Amino acid sequence: MLIGIGFLLMAGGVPISSPAMFGFLASTVHDNGWSWLFAGLFVSFFTVAGHAMCYAAFRKFGPSVWSKIVRRYPGMLGAISRIRLSGAQGKPFDPALLLLRWIGVGYSQVFWMLGLSGHDASSTLRILFLADIFWAGVWSFGLTKLLVDAPLVGRYLTRFGWALLILSLAGYGLRRFLRQKSS
Image (cartoon, rainbow, N blue to C red; front, side, top):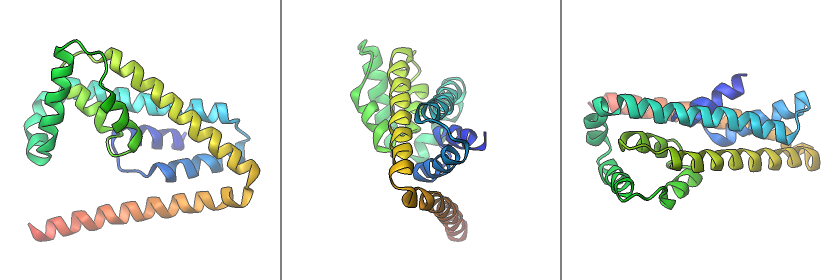
């Protein structure tokens, strides 16, 4: 269940490394004998739930924090304007959102922006949720095959996941420390 919560938090925007999470998943798949399909559905459920919660929270509470976000990330204003424009023109889906979703940089922020855009994004969300399910299935299948075909790699994948998680947390802490020191 802890792995599921990790995927939920990652989908919500908490900076957790996806290779780390999939490393933990690989270990769980191996230890519990899960099939790749079950692992994919497990990851899909928590990822879609995290994205849905983000969208709903930003749709509900976004206007009250909008000015803070624009001040901190000025580039977001253009992205939100583009989403609002595509929604006003009746376009059900912007392919740029799918690209952002798959490259990792905009993994969670796509759902934040959709919520902040102020329009009903249910048709876009359906496409992005299907992309989440496909994404989880591809990674789960790949990891399961890797564990069967190359058990040595699978053994080190969890260690790599822990190292990434620890380094991510250390980097975040160092960045926060340096920001406070310079203020």
